[in-house]
Length: 237
Length: 265
Image 1 (cartoon, each protein chain N blue to C red):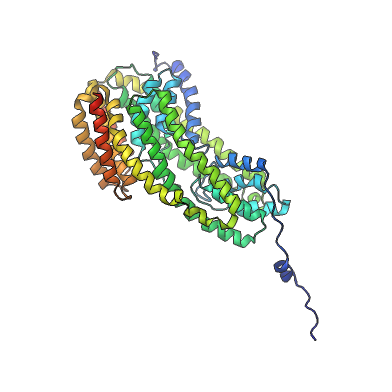
Image 2: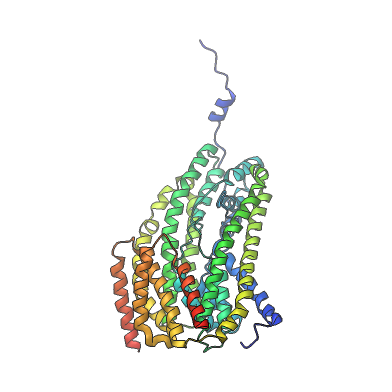
């Protein structure tokens, strides 16, 4: 897609609809319906498709999914919300020239920065919902279904707004910034791409160990899979 | 001869027959099932998903008289923690207990006892099992050259078959067994599922990760050997700092430094 992201009107035409998408995908992570459209391999692909570049969206989505493998959304722990972050990454990458050496590193950086922002925003939202619920404690203690529903709907609405705001803020910063960074990128495409993939592979390998090391013999299963995977690679190349 | 005992208020309460069991309509079941997808919609640090449990219970409790219904809704709007998918078991069991007119104190103790198992079993089965397994399958499909649409369909299809089945089964099991739902948590899927999924997912990860990296690296493929060595070394470091730092945050810092270097050098 060829547009000037430094032009505020052009940028707004992208930021507004993509932020709505980010809000909906961000809601999926915790609030509703948790069908995992918030995973980066989905959210980045959808954002890329929305901007006319589904393959670019899938590529960065896969890179982000490797990184997101380590995110286990256990209850009250603090974790990245990948719905809005993946949307930001997919949108930023989809808007870069296809062969630009800095396109993927800058887009992954934008997604990870959005993930940091989304992680903080979820803590703020959860505190706000707590205050909203505590203010209705008397009505809830009286068994008011109306207030129970109001708290639930308010929480869901605020979560959509949170995801949309995170996406909008990250896009407002990274759409113009990415164009500047990519234009002044001095590295070549081979090293740039290899560096990003090395980072993603590192986090993914660490995640596989973190998730599965408590189960006996999983290392052997992993090694057996590696042999099969290497076999598929060699036979196809 | 002693006079016949006069019943007191307390003895009347204990001697009274429990209220008759109330049946649940299909419409109430469907409404609750839909609401279960939003059980964490008002998750907060004070009562966690307590409000969501009440929100989901509301359609099932409409069959109760107003006063009993209000008391039940108030009772369930307090602290509650569980895995969101297995919360369906709690919602079904608590609804059955309320509809059967069980003693409120007993229901509260039962409710408290449910939190721990439903949280730990669900976390191991879904967050540390099924979700990463489906991610790995999607990454494998990507590595084998699948199109965006096919990759999305494979991930969402595989994940949600398990997800939706788990929620539906949980609600059904809870409603059927009420306060005798504990044996359900010992079913083979919940007991043996996590280690089995972990082994299968580890095997699939071994296949899928090289394929996904091979496709994603594109023109950087000539440096694949260096990438593999760097990834193994980095993963060993991450394993050492496990619990003290999250990999994606470290990745953000390293990548920011790399972008800065690539632009200003």
